[in-house]
Length: 130
Image 1 (cartoon, rainbow, N blue to C red):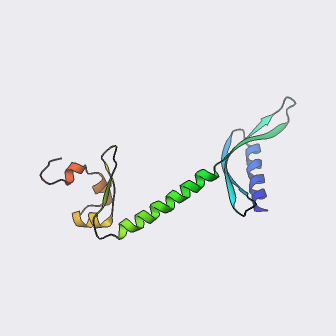
Image 2: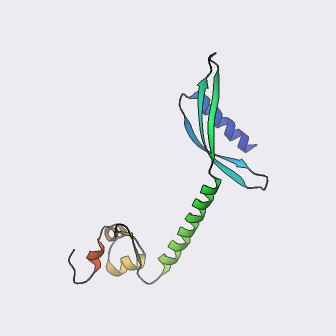
Image 3: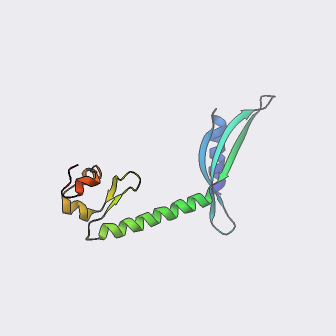
């Protein structure tokens, strides 16, 4: 099957080299889904000089699920904010830097995204000098 072919190719690549390779591999599950693994494979020789493949695998299925959910949530947020007629910008609470802005605020104030995120918040407050 396709999983076996990928694993075999990855194993051959690791055996052909002389260093650790880091891979992302998937394994089919009984429920039809996949589990995802961060794998580290490397060749080694035993005392007799025979070459073997060694490796370590870490199950990153849950991490990947959370990352996918976060990406979907961010895309949904971005879609809503970008369609607003009201100007919206985001400030990093720790640094107080402007980190993002929607098209409406950029159009209202005449900045590009790069110009706007280079501003300090004080630059946007009337009556204060930067």
